Length: 381
Image 1: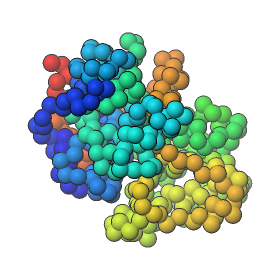
Image 2: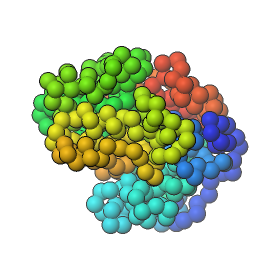
Image 3: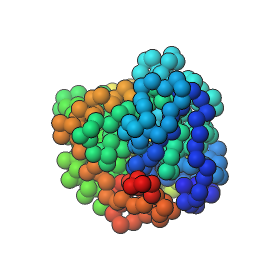
Image 4: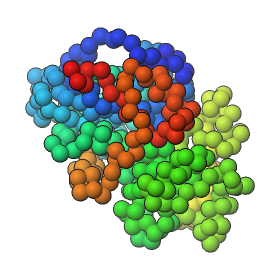
């Protein structure tokens, strides 16, 4: 696929990717997904998203070529590729912070590189393609267990680890009440994973009834539509004995709806790094001394947030891009033993050639779409 400008993507013919570094690998893509974070790019809300870019940070495939220094994978291996591009050797990678690699992204001192996610995240082409170049192939690509379905594997590149890390960062204690803002795939997975950390009650907030219905079934949680509330913050306080939730997860990010001022300044005029409506609700609805976990994507500039409330309430606020590689051993085990069912999130499978329709459907929330997997035409060749 190729980005042509806001809300315009097309399936086009592009040159075959090539080995550029001895640690590169070329992967024939077998599955690739459209992520909610891709919609920030699609809608023109991420700086330096350049025309001609190929999106896609969720993909699995087969190794078809390796650089001379690649020793951990070989031609013919089927691999899942974490969305982080990480060197494995820098100060942050050695701490397991693969989402903050200091070497892979020369454009930033914060986030590491990400496949297919603008030049603010390194400018690498992504996996919504038939073939993809994968740097640092001794670090990221992980061999898919022989008994694992590719549909499960592709969701281990981002959705499952991001939902899991969202719950992990929330510092959930046994019996805690956890509120998740956003019933997209990440929010739904975060709600599901909250139970693994001992939550006693899990609540998810969104505005789309079909997503809320899906969340109730998949994540075994309570689910409420904020359009039916006068004030989501007051609603959460009311159902938590006026204390607030113990932990709140923001799984919405830059394109949150629900507040006109935030929408105008953050989504229309781009005067801040996205609409921070969900972040406001999160800060104000968590109890004093509670924990706020942020996995919804915001841009690299400023946001209008009530930082005074955060300080005066004694909150702990944590957020980061997920370090997929750190979590994979545990999550692969959870999938293999049936604790987690990633492919249960998938509602649509379409050919890669129909990428424009896929983005339009997901963006407009058509046909009860939760998660879309795209199949390249070369899969059966």
